[in-house]
Image (cartoon, rainbow, N blue to C red; front, side):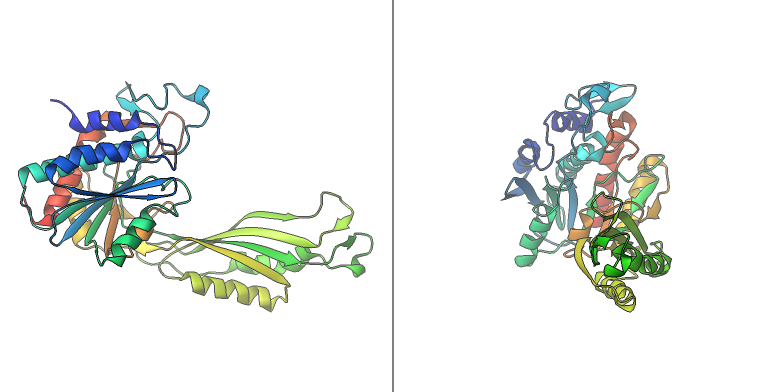
Length: 378
């Protein structure tokens, strides 16, 4: 039997699309779905290409979301195959983007084709939201589509993001949320002087040390049912000119919060400032909110997707919020229920990225069954 999802995945993978490039992948999606009555809207923002393609006008609106951009391949001499020539080897499909996440895009399309073929007048609406700016800065991608949909009052009821969530075995994990990411660059100001005359200066490293100890020991929250406690970590501390006989005039500290829905970005900022002020530091901070945390309770979407995974793979998935962030952090603004599911993620962002052939067609079946459940068709 022909594996339609495999063939489409190979076609997508053969189109190099290192972020923010799309490489013609979204046009291929349009060519497959537009003849079936899907209405396609392409939104280009700078070098980024975004696609919103929808079938139907009614509610509920069920969306499948993902990205066609991939990370750079890395050292080519460490690849066993050409990263942009999809190759079947040892029971796997090898190429950059095989697991993250062109196989999911292919599965989206095949699932959509099969749903419309079986239910041409299905209730509700089915849509795909695809960007080429997920692996990059993510400022002109999904967030722009969400802004456009929000501006015209178009809301999504259920969204499945095709990120590779499976850990050890296909189907073992569904992500029902992600932690937020809040970064800061702290500059602690001192007074530079000769190290032999410390009374003429002020050492910002020593000034900051007690505050560092307090910040690292602080319990920011206790997490909740789905999230571990919020974590504060330092990624870099830099000070000095390189000379060993100078007290530096400034110390720069890069830090990050991975925070749960038990905290807010504004609340965490206020608590950091309170610690630094209490220690009498002369400082400034530049803040960057990389993503808000989001959480989907165990409800209609989690139930439908879990049931589809169990039916196809035989595995009962764990519901988890581990890992980094995803474009779900933007979609949650116009959709109350957002979850992620996709193939095994063991090889993502590595050389020799690959997806097992045994996962490819079942992935399309899972997306189809979940969407049919949510749309109310069998």
